[in-house]
Image (cartoon, rainbow, N blue to C red; front, side, top):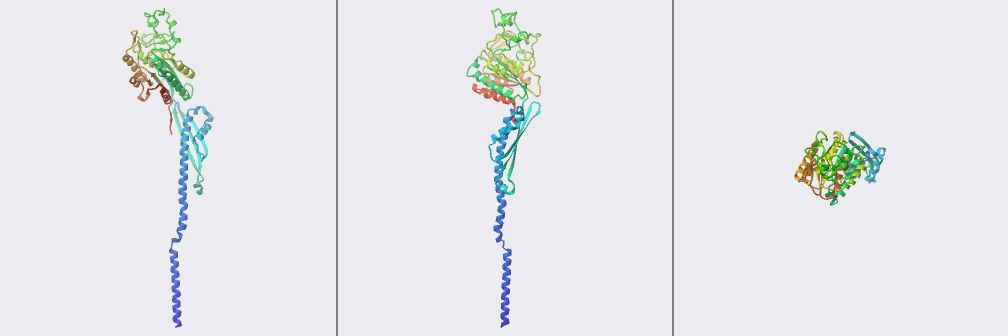
Length: 439
């Protein structure tokens, strides 16, 4: 009996031991106790990724603002880059920081490089660096985000020879046309003066016209003039005593159309061919034409001298603008054509052709279609000489004739209000300066 009890007790103890082993095995195999620790460990990289996204978004926003500021800085400084010298970087820093207005960007550094890659071409490179303090990534030893932006402005300032053929006829006195023309011409001259990096880069001629062009009496002793001794002073001062022997004492410096076909050509005058000579004419209040010049004060003064009077002959305005852009007499100031030189005419008029001169037959022409045909021909001849033409119609005039005269339709401006002239001339001047952001 006692032996039996001992055996039962031993068996009971063995069962308890086996249960204990089983429980230990179950505890060993159970992973539920690791969930909290695993989640805690997993949260660290998740928070890191979220924080990095927030920091990146802040940094990207700051970089976008920096890029806009550096683009504007480069464009603003390009006009004066050549004259700023050692002050260029300092000026760039001042402009950039004023435009950025992002206090979270620290340690801003702006650098500039100004160069002339080739003749007539200029380049300004502006770059900026800075850093933004991180909010979350500092936990991973990334306390700052480095930012870098750059911009490059390239502008081609070829040498430019520009002739302004400006209608000074009586109709320009109406609707504020002459007043607005003067303002627009001053704006154009100011833009081109600023665009000229060195003296002589830009030269401008001003050709006021009505039915004549006033070249001035300083040329009176040249052998370029056609005079019909059978008519008192070519018919412009009959009965005054003016004749072939003393016309220089009466002449105020104006000329009419030459004989066909030289009325629409640039051939130099020669005594060997009377058709190439310029017939003298009386002058009204027409301002004297000004050959190519870099004297900006004199050019602006010339604009102010203009006064509206007389009838319209667009042909003579165009042909004398052409004369101003070649080295032929009587205006030999222009330079020879070259790859780095643009030659441009701007013709502005507010009316239809009303009067020209048939010098071959010594008679006035008043048929508009006949005069228009000569205008169209001189436009073609000028363009064939590789000279660009901008054409501006102010309220009135033959729109088709002027549109066809322009080098292309984008260079024709049909102005409906005289107040629009300033914007038109500003656009032309900026196009001539050819400023653009490259990168």
